[in-house]
Length: 549
Ligand SMILES: Nc1ncnc2c1ncn2[C@@H]1O[C@H](COP(=O)(O)OP(=O)(O)OP(=O)(O)O)[C@@H](O)[C@H]1O
Image (cartoon, rainbow, N blue to C red; front, top):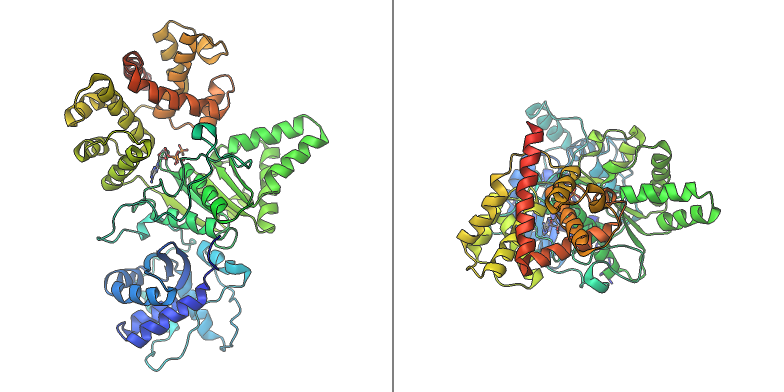
């Protein structure tokens, strides 16, 4: 079980007291610190919300050591910090100033940001805004600060403060490592794919231990970790958005594993939005009371709902309505919801405003494409997880420098390099990697690759029909062709497993997962499979480029 939750407001008060005592921070910075908030402490990192870019820069650059020292003392363990900007804190402070001070501050009517909302629900108590104490050294009023700031930055946006990774650049001395193992290894099912013992459908590989943290995902990781530690207390919902293959699904599963490791008996459910849609449609179409009840039990009698790729939620009004009610029920009952999407709520087409505004109620954070060092660290982690032969740093660096936008592609390239090495017995060096990536990249026109193209090309290559590739017959040739096509759909398109399964006659996502694993293994063992995958990749890329012209 987790330790008793930290009293964040008291810890922040103590941090400020220590900073005042040490007297290393000037008055102006101290006044900004008074307006700031401690939002969470995740592993060894304190998440701070501060009112302005100026404050963030000053705390990170000039007062980093003093702040880190004070936080370490107040938390009682070595604590570093990450900062986000929440401009409404400045206004909140100004409003507080106008009111007579009381010992129990009540929430002021003010513009709410996702961050505010998040803090309002900590420990189920109303927000404890940092008190504006009158100290001998404090002469600047928050009203002064608000005015100064408004003058300095008249353009500041009225939008709620989105939290994104740009506020979380790593310190120079920071190493790229997975989080210092907060969670024990998840319970693995046979085949190592999903956890047993509950209906959660978690992938055993996607944990915080196997997730590499860099500037591109630092805040998302910390927020995900915080919701697992304190479900429905920290941020609800947590909304993670960003491009394909950047680790959103991985984080979602990691939340589930970590929460399960902390709270025995906690009910966690991971679901893709398409699966949610299917479940709902089945429950309605059957017309059976039992099915409807089963749907309710599945999505409402749970503690954490992890819903992936919300952009695919079928636009049918009934499904939207079902999701809206599920969301409200869970939220009202203080159950945690974590959502991923390719776009932030505001840009999610096809969703009603009431739905979008609910997505914005908690905390929003993006994940960005990782930088080179993070990509190398991810590759190193994959090698370590597979327990395969070491891959030299220059080879990892070469692969990481050539593939930059999608981690799934990065993993695919690593698999191919390892496969050629094990088949050809050529040394694992940069020239080997070059020869593999040459094939992979020279055909890259940037044109979009579709499942239809992959299936058609695979069928033509093996002398089969499209129906045979997507059908149910199980001769050896058919199964191999089908699995290769699924593998390439996973590697070369943005499609989630569930969607790929649909393209192959409505197969389950676990079938696609199995095919993916199988082909990755076979590529290392059988030259014929490696050649087929390589050759087909070139054909698919060429054909997609031709279609795009
Ligand atoms: N920071 C990371 N550390 C380790 N592995 C990562 C990291 N980010 C992504 N990956 C890996 O990259 C692959 C793709 O990640 P994932 O499926 O989570 O992406 P996604 O953002 O959900 O993509 P999509 O939107 O297409 O569903 C996974 O195998 C995942 O483990």
